[in-house]
Length: 234
Image 1 (cartoon, rainbow, N blue to C red):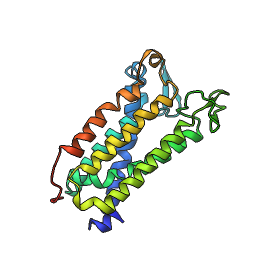
Image 2: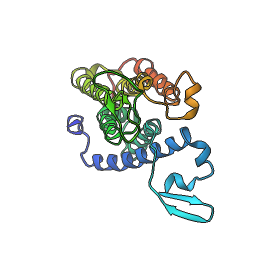
Image 3: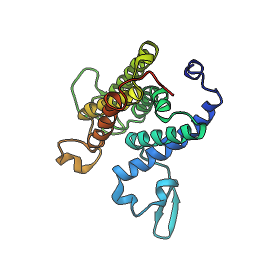
Image 4: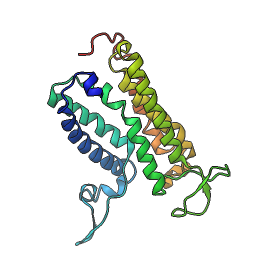
């Protein structure tokens, strides 16, 4: 629908799919290994990219564990840049159009986390608390559900902005809004999450919150300072 509305050749969508799949997968995986488990993976670089575990001279097939939304965001941006260069589209215009869909994607990722009892919330006595028996038997905030709802709301708002305000928006605004908005939501909801790292017990902010600050700043820059006039979207 967006490609048709913007008069973009539909076959570019298949090329976008390829770039996005590679970018998100590699970005999310590498981001997790660098941000959350760097002490281990700096000595096991091969395990970042292959589903194996190396014990001395012994190699055991394993499964990938760990993806990072921060790394995924970097992967998405790089994928859009390569896609835009390959198809000779405007990079920022492509980011505006494509990133409005990230809320939808992120929402379903959090639903998957909920089903797998991953990234659980802190203990609580609220009546809607979940018990994640794979983790423990305490009632906890279903923070994955909170994020899914928040990201879906961001997606709905992005669609409203696109259909009602698109022609009046400065170039880069939609990209900045989704980047800053998504990570602002992430920053706030981190307060309801259990610590992922041992070191976070002695920190005021989670590691995920600290890594959310740069995307928020970049997003605000694109919203309000990148281009004041949005009449030319070439």
